Length: 151
Ligand code: GTP
Ligand code: MG
Image (cartoon, rainbow, N blue to C red; front, side, top):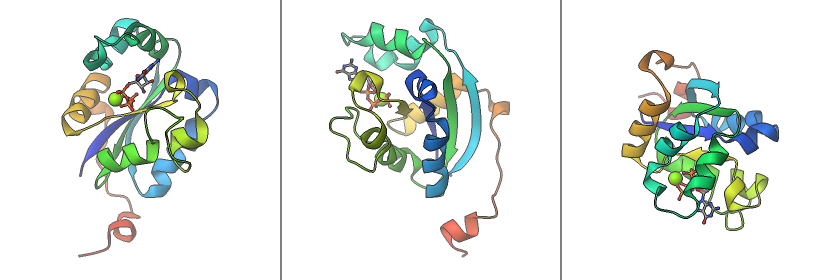
């Protein structure tokens, strides 16, 4: 099954939105296979956002991500990379649809509370950056036959 890297950013943690965010992925039917709370260094944050290093907001973004606790997670399930991004909503909360995490819970692009990998390659890279293999679990939940059907 596919895996993606999801992070509650420092603003989401400070605002008490960890459980709300976990709940949306969990209720959808996705499976949490790794989770930890970390304060990343600015250098580490820069690595995470390396694809944006030429952007004018890169420094502020790295500073922000390293400004406090982040909840780093790996979620697993069919289509979780693409559909996870749908649950999250557009980058700019002014453009995110109501019903999405950013649409419902955030207001400005620089404080959009959550990160999600944008494709299979970045998902793999980000999972490897944030987690050691032994920090992730593999298991079958009893709900899976109800989420996916039995064949
Ligand atoms: P992530 O899931 O956090 O990677 O967001 P995204 O994939 O929806 O957007 P992208 O990777 O392009 O940008 C990463 C982050 O940089 C965004 O989540 C924003 O917090 C921030 N960002 C993107 N564009 C802007 C911008 O124009 N101004 C500012 N201040 N921040 C931006
Ligand atoms: Mg991105």
